[in-house]
Image 1 (cartoon, rainbow, N blue to C red):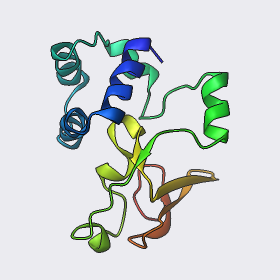
Image 2 (cartoon, helix red, strand yellow):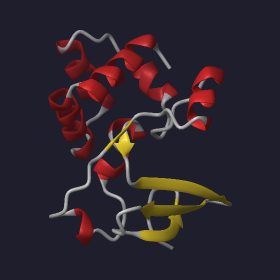
Image 3 (cartoon, rainbow, N blue to C red):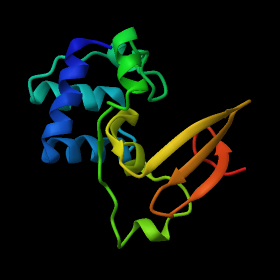
Image 4 (cartoon, rainbow, N blue to C red):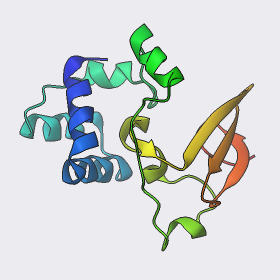
Length: 137
């Protein structure tokens, strides 16, 4: 993943206002061009290629990043909202965060193979097997 994309995600991890704006762009289905323009306004030169390297929200990880995943070091954040989360029956955008980085502390999605995934909220909002996009079977 490009250094500028990493830097932008690091800023999002440490700046809740910046992260909220990125999440709002993601929730609205903004095209990469809109996110690139937003990034540029905040001093980050990200490109369409940076977004392609993230694929469907999953970036290709380096060996060092894979080690961090194995050690549990991907950033998370408590996004549990007691007024909203108990009503959920499946993940919402905030469960995974911008480009599936900085997910909620309580959210997990684990592959079961052959396109099946186990989606679970540790706070009990949902726990089901579904397709990779979160749609229940």
